[in-house]
Every structure is written in structure tokens, then in C-alpha cells.
Length: 411
Image (cartoon, rainbow, N blue to C red; front, top):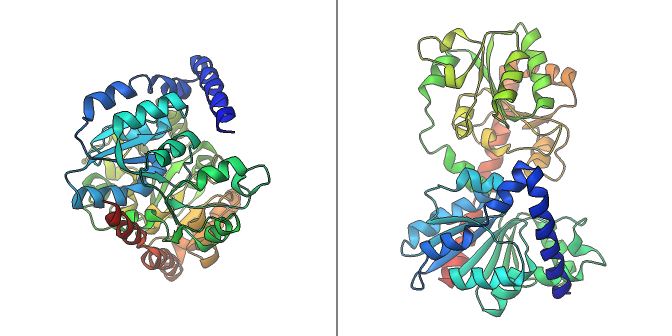
């Protein structure tokens, strides 16, 4: 079966190269991999002790980051390599100081895999959340390189638990140990005879807990907010923004709004600004002297959102009406209410916090208006809702401790 998979991988790569002429994202996906081996040969020598982390994209990188940072601190002599599958991860983090080397993961065929492992010769490989690549796992096992899967979560709908999923199940069995987010995942793996597991929780909770310990001051945002309530909407899509702009345009409540769209291309930013009829400015054009005169601030850059949540009294997290919910833990850790769209199934923390009442799901503009109004007018409700979120993170953090205990035994 591995041979059939490899043939399919070659065909897929050929097709991706063709389609890359018509897609900016696919073009990055293909072109970005052209220099991978040159980067590795330049950055890693045969004498380097390398620890390899692989993440699909940005979200998975953030899940692995607490482990990367702890290893970097405890084992400074090791060289940290981070690979990404997706351009949306690599392009944002290609210059991160957390890792010594950052590259795309070469496509999963036998030639690439052998070349990659020979160039990197990792002492340990750590895959994050969903990443299961049969040829890589097969070669790592053959070379007796310890391989972990961390912050993993499984559902019964995945291929591993289907009658036709034997091949992928065998690949999953090649991990030396799997650290899981919940007991449901452990039960599912046990049903297919995978017992080398530990329920450690989600490392993202450790990551966001650390956010509150750093300096989150943004003087320009503080000047903008003044002493008013502030609603921060992060990672928004046009579907989210239609609801937000409708509320902003009609509400008579005295509060400030900050919107950080998921896509910051100029056309999207201008479209959003044009949809709002209150005093609105862009962060790139704001000055300390004038920013307090505006009601709405649109963030037209990346990298600030986690700090901006520090100034929120209420937050809205986008994606729940379209492609998939964005990170709800980043605002939740500040002990504030979180509003989301209706499509949050499969996001464990969102499911649990909706049940507990810290996150509130809305279905349309009317339900958003109702929820926002209650949170603005009822101080005790707003405070208690936010406390649920902060308490959830405090109670469930600690996955990194268990994972590091295991890693230390391997290094």
C-alpha cells in the first residue's frame, strides 16, 4: 500500500505544480519548496544535534511553541528545525527567533523523505496535532528516530477508524508516543489497538497562559480606548464584518470598536472601512494626537491581536460563519466574554466553553445585537462570563509539563 500511496503523492505533486500557475497560495506552496534542501544544507551540518518539529500551519505551530521554547531553554546546544506544510504558517513564521531553521516540509515521497532525513538527521521528531505522513513516519521508524505526536485530537469520522483506513492506521501506529487533548481521543485510539498514549491536554492553553505574563501594553490602543468599554473583533471574515458593521452603525451605546480582519489586503480593508458610517481610522494612519477622536479602529497589520485583546471588555472571534473558527483562547485568557458564530463544532475548547457559558454563539445579526447589548448593559453578567473563560484555561493548562517529562527521557 505504501507504494500506491507514493505513486499518488507523485501524481498529486505534478498536479499541484500545474495548478500553482492559477493560485497565489499554491504558487507559494510549490515555489517555497524549491529551496528547502539548499536551506537545510546551508544551515545544518553533520555534527549538529537537531530536534525537528513539524506543523501544518500557524495554529499548530502555536500549539507546539511551548514545547519548542522549553526545549530551547533546557537544551541550548540542540538546533531547532521547524517545518511547515502550509504557506499560511511558513510565510508568517519563516523568520521566527524561536527556531534556528524554518523551512517547508518537502512533499511526502520516498526520494524527498530520504534526502530530508539524511540532511536533518534529527535526534527527535515531534509532529503537532494532525500531521501524519506515511513515508516520513516509515523512514523515521526504520532509522529508529523517536517520533511523537503532541496535542493530538481524534474523532470517529476520521479515516483511521473506518474499515478502509488500515493503511493510515498503520502509519499512526509508528509514533513512539501520542499525547492527546482528551479522553475521547484515547478511547478511539484504544479501539484500534493503539495504547501508547497519554491524555495531557492542549498545549495551546499553556501558550495563551504565558501571554498574560508578558508586556501587553500598546500605548496607541490605550489612547484610543480612553475610559470607555471596548469590543475587539479578531480574525474576522466578511460574513462576520457584515454583522459587526450593522451593529456599529445602529447602536447608540457609548463604546469603542477594534476590528482586526483575517485578511489585511488593501481592498478588503477599504471595503470594511466603507461599510461603517461612524468615525473610523486605520491603525497604519492613526496618531496619538487624533486616535481618541475615532469610534472604530481597523487593524491593518498582523502580529498585534493577542496584545489588543488585553484592552477588550468584550471580544468577538471570527470564522464561525465560514471556513472555521479562529483562536478563542487568546481573548478568553484575559477573562473576557467571547462571542462567536454558529460553526464551532470540532473546536474542543469552544464546545466546552459554550456549554459552560464563557463563550456565546450567535446565529445572525439579531442574536448578536441581543448578546452584545446584554454584555454592555449588565456588568455582573459580563464579569461572570469572562471569569468562566479565565478559570477554564487555568484549570486545563499543564500539557507541556507532561510532554517535557517524556522528552527529557529521550534526550
